[in-house]
Image (cartoon, rainbow, N blue to C red; front, top):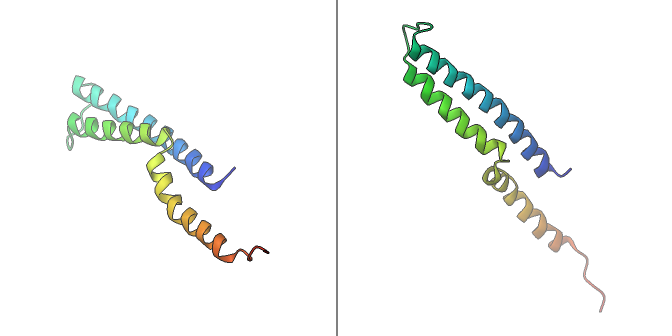
Length: 93
């Protein structure tokens, strides 16, 4: 596998963890709103916002985070290609 594919695989694994964590926060928001437990320092809105944020980011990372992968490897890939052309021996005529 190429390094880009390894990074995409790691991003997908992180995305799965974030989605599961976000669903846990959403469940806590729902249960807190119903009154199953009390937390004096926070409100259901906190759990809802964090849960939705984690789910959205997790879905993006689960898709492979194409913009992140492109950003991480575009500079290195472009520099490597130009280096290869500069270091190539001249072709015989």
